[in-house]
Length: 389
Image 1 (cartoon, rainbow, N blue to C red):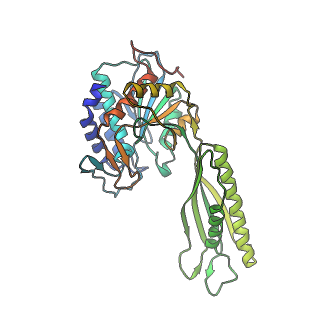
Image 2 (image 1 turned 180 degrees about the horizontal axis):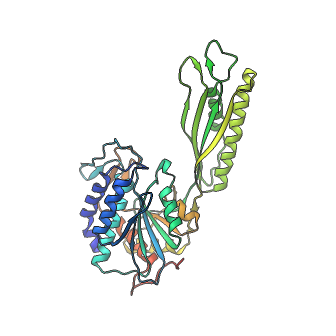
Image 3 (image 1 turned 180 degrees about the vertical axis):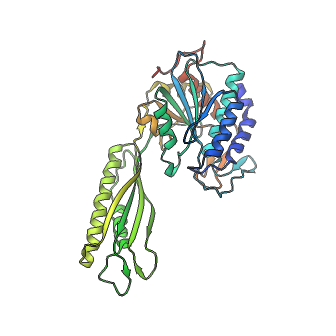
C-alpha cells in the first residue's frame, strides 16, 4: 500500500502520457502499441496485441488459483483531429479521455510496480487487459473477443472513472435500433397531396415514443439520439431515419420497448400513407448493437471482499450501482464482475474538457488493487475468494 501511495506522481504522469496518444474507437493501434511497451517496461514479459488491437499482459500465478482479468479500455469517443493535450489548472487536469479511461490504464502500471517491488505472488493468474471498442459504435468488440478467447477467466475487475469507494455490480442490457423510412419523394408544391413524406413519418414515430410509458423500476430508459431526413427545403423527403437506444438492467424491459418501437414505426407509415391515400412509403428496422447485461449478486464473496478492502483502508463502502461498460460481457457469461475506480474525482465525461483531480488518487488505486488481490489470493497470506473456472 505504501509503494502505491509513493507512486502517485508517476501514476499521474503516465495517465497524461497515455491520454495524449489519440485513440478514437476503431483507431486504437498507436495507443495499444504504447501501452504494450509500458507493460513490458514494468516487468511483464508475456504481453501481446491481438488481431483487433486488444493489449493482453499476463502475470503468472503459482498455478493454484483462479484467473482474474483486470480490464480498462483504450479507446475514446473523440475523433483523430481532437486536441488531446492535457492542461492543468491548479490541482485539476483536463483533457479528452484523461479520466475515461487513460488513468485506469496507468493505474495498472502502478499495481505492477508495487507487486514487483514487494515480491507479491498470487495463486491465480492476473491478466492485464486494455480493450478496444468500448465506446459507442465499438459495441464492446474488444471485450467480446477477449472473453471468447480466454474462457477460463473466473473473475473480473473493470477500471473506470468511479470515485472511491464506489462500485458497480450490474450492467445494463442495451439495444440500439435504426428505423429508416423510404418513399418516392417529390416537389414540395407540384407533388403536394400525392406523395407521402419520410420526414413526416419519422416525426409521427418520435411523437409516439415521446408519449410511451416506461417502467420506473428497474430504471429503464430510451433515447432518440439522431434524426436525419430530407435533402432540400422544397423537396418532399424521400428518406429519413432515426437511431435510438434503450437501456435497463431488465433485458425483458429492453426487448419490450424494442417491440413497441417496431409497432409504432408501422403505425407511423400507415398513418402517413393513409393521409395521402397512397401506399408508397415503407419502413425498416435494423438492430445495430446489443448487450445482454447482468448482475453480480450483492451478497457475492467478491462484493464482501471489496467492502472489507474499503474498511481496511479506512473508507466507508457505499453505492452498488449500475453502468454500461465492458463489464456487460463477462456478466452476461455469468462471470463475477466488479467495476471499480482508480481514485481522485472526475467529471465532464465525453467532453473535450473532461476533468480529473488526482489529489489522493492513490487511495482509489489501493482499493481496486486490494480487492483484486483478494479475488486472486496472495501466496502465503490468503486464499483466493474465487474458485478456478
